[in-house]
Amino acid sequence: MSKQKATPPTETAEIIDITPVSLRRWCDYHAAHLSPGANPPAGQARRFTGRDIEVLKTVKQLREQVFTVARINEQLATLPLQK
Image 1: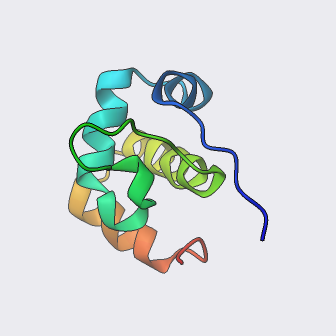
Image 2: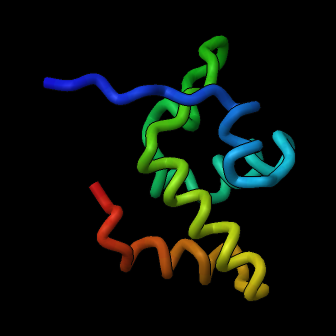
């Protein structure tokens, strides 16, 4: 079994070209489509998988099209990125 690289929040925000504040907000809004590491229990650091980064890039594209959070979640549910 191979272990995926976990990317820290600052690097993830830079990759997606958003602020860390937006990253945290998006993690809350779209938690159902992200790994558990994107929304860890209190006291644990957030870590993002490659799949998380792809999902968040999709979120950014949909937000640029002025989609609502609910509509974005509907779109994410249709992606082949699902677990």
